Amino acid sequence: MSMMRSSLLLAALSVMAACVSPEDHRRALSSNDALKAEIASLTATQQAISLENEKLRAEIARLGKQAADADWIREQQDKLDKLIKQYQGGSGSGIDGVDVIRTSEGVAFRVLGGVLFSPGRIEISEQGQKTLAQLISTLKAEGKKLRVDGHTDDQKITQSKWGTNLRLSAERAIAVADFLIKNGLPADKVGVAGYGEYRPAAQGSGEDARQQNRRVEILMLDK
Image (cartoon, rainbow, N blue to C red):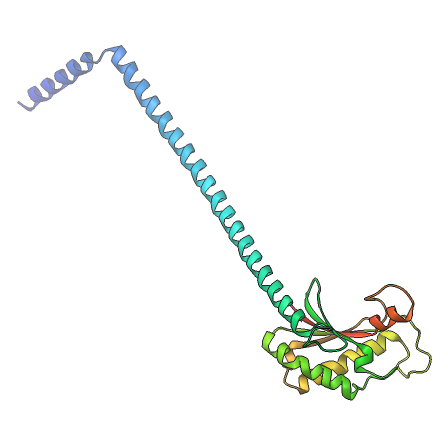
């Protein structure tokens, strides 16, 4: 009986196979190939969309950073304008011998050397101490790292014990840094540098230019 059922099943399968024409078989294979091609196309499209999304996210991030940078620049410019208005010489509340300047590293208070020191000396004069004291509150409020830069004119030292303008500029920068620290500025936020005559504020060898070049700059670093 079992043998008879098996024979009947085989016969039925043979009849079913015979019912599928070669043309139907070709159409089935063609449909299958078309489906595979469509799946491949959809996969490629999805990958292209993912890549485009990554580019868009990167562009959004770049534009966001530009906007943040623009806001930061405006904020810094506003601060600079306020400092200039508050301290610039010639204004009602200005400090004689002090200018506010913008450098590539940050805003700086430029203090003429003649206000701070006697010729060839590194001890801050009484007037110099009063001048620096007027800057303390602003330096504390800004809370930035500071670098005190010492500069001299181009005249060679002949009588001072410091020997070179570079040494003199460094010693003066240290003296100003010490004063700032003693008056409440954190020591770990105050650095010094001496440049001698090598970074003049004004070109020329006349007395006006030399007076401008003898200076100390208290730089509030942006970074």
